Image (cartoon, rainbow, N blue to C red; front, side, top):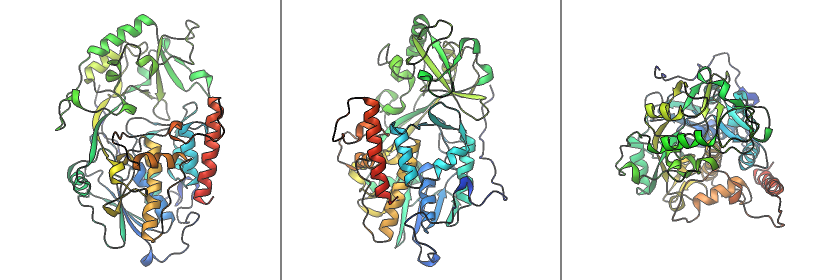
Length: 478
């Protein structure tokens, strides 16, 4: 199959509305200055137009700041990025659950209280995904790009930045992501004394819908929640064991790094390659991405032994993502081994899975509670490079860094969100002392326990969420 070409985000129309997604881009958010003179407006340079950088730039502009957003694409692409658009989603189109009694849903609720603009963009690009917020990646990127370009107060510079040196009275927010490399990575190493952590991260394959054997596949969401938005590839015990054995012996793509051979590389637990998971035991995948719980195979009337879910990748439903199948297998091996899964024997791959190096700061040693460098207080970091793991987590971190930078420029103290909130707990996690620091995504386990214990898990999560939203509303002044 012909290798997909790089796709630029759809062009921005000159006649597009000046305030897309129903938000007045020129109006300061609650607590912001009204009619602040441009000459006295706070000045912030944001490096990187990913989710964190765009969220930070949009919020700062809404508060009357003058923002310079520097993005290296299309002059230079990272190993994982292909589109010229902003806020490009790489390894998944899912922004996870929306239920307020889930960690991901709570995070989104808190972000809305903080004035998130990217969640508004996500609504314009939504695709069906049961109880999750999933988007058409190209439409989402185009919406965010249009939003940024049309927001007064933001100047976009398409170039590669190689130095981090904020002028007197200015701040810099580094939101260049975990794939930061080259001269800028060297500059970050200089500022931090080289105190960073290296991992390897992977992306899942994408297949065409027309190539799937629909006679072997059924549509359903787990436990019947929402619409039947996922395609399911059920496996019986023999099929699973054949797949497992083939996966264990499949050939991987070589990884070239100064960190050492592939076997010695640290792999991030939250985005583990499927072949690495298989090495941990015959049933590991059945309790992970191939778990069959909440599903019934209509052909047998029983729960499958194992089950692969396919999630819609675009609004048209012509592409599907192999959920949880991040991989570093050779492309030919992906086609051979994944073809053993019922329904995928003739699958055509719009994108094979890939693996790339991710670099994270040793944030507990380096960052203050406002996400500034302890040794360079005018330099702030945001997004996945800090250890906030996940798309929405990255965007939320951009909101926090923007608030920290603006407080610093105005000479005001920065009080972090309360620890009862998801954002406050995540911020505390990445800045508290931790000798074994690894990235962390939103999860209920990092929230402080309730004063009055609730035995029922669903009820406990609902109570934690209600407490967190009340605390965030008070902190945000809503």
